[in-house]
Image (tube, rainbow, N blue to C red; front, side):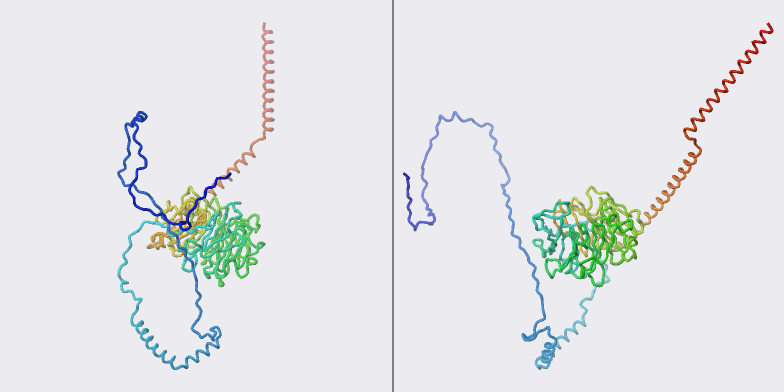
Length: 582
């Protein structure tokens, strides 16, 4: 049998709030002390009581919600026309203009406005608003500030599986946007849920990318077209080349076909200086340099195999990992290879063998960065292994200047676009180094720990004030450097030219001395070889020597035997004489 108890309550009392009222205190229980329990207690002696003199405080954290910005655009079109007139139709607009110009009200309005316009024009002509009144005064030199850099913004890979920021490219107009290519370069580390997307960031909005680029394979390199800022070209991990028009969306406009593309990841693309502004070339570790035109991406317009034997064989080719092209030298370009060689090439040579002009050797590993000095194109910078080196085109044997060997390997570097003596390098320990060889040659002018992970890429804005660094986990850090590092100093060009010239002369003298020593060593070795050959001709063989010694030995024995026989005869004769006398 179930025991059920029903609680009843009026429906009107459901949900009613508690009613509190004031009333005096009531004593419910009073437990008196028990003297018999006192024996069970132990006195605590001594008794320590901590006392804190300072006021007790607690820490609280408040995180405000971030405001997300969205970029919106407006297209302005020609307006002010009546609804029945199409502004695109030339005949309709001309007919309407003629009709309006005949109207008396229009003529009176123009006459009234004309007098106001004439007054403004006369006023502008009377006063030069751009006149500088204090040109003759001496400019007060600013006090030299310590080299420094500060973080402006941080752009993180929005995907869960982080990828390396392998390439950076600044927007050519105003540099308010930064294109970042993301890919994983570690062997067989690509997972199924890893995103292929790369992004264009507005440098003032780190919360959300302004635009997403959707390639078929992760982008290893990405470059804006300086002639048309809406066009970008990218090199993929699978060797294909694609280009985007930001006005047409996230998908590539056109791509190269796989059979005519590179066979390895495309590590560098550079736009060429051409009339159309549609030509560029690419380099890959498959040992090829390919020239392209975005109007016809089905196949490359030209091809060069980086075979140092000049036979054009792909199996002998050097893997290209960096490129350099200077617009003032339209026929020349340089390639940095995996083997640590810089290959200087001439595009306009008649045969493929003549296109490879010479090589520069001096590094122990892949050349990750290669760039000519923007003020002195004959001198170029290379970044590889644990050093950065400055070279002169005239000297192939050795670089003219170099940094010390760092404990962490270098991954990228570039020149300052505004100062000829300043260049930047990034390292695998997350450090950014700023070098000014007029100030210091042995150590960097400024060394800054940007992040805890390895830095892989660096790109400086055209004004030299802002630079971006890409890391292994896809974090792109935007930095602003102090004005001293991005302002051309007094006589800096002349001093840099003198230093380049002096170091080039020194290396030429050392090279001539080494060549002389090598010639002396070679002639000495040849002379010693000749002497050894002559000695070899005069010497007997071992068999001849044994035969000669045996012959001499037997001759000596025969002579000894003959002498003994003579002595015996003399003794016998003496004995006979003695016997006869007796």
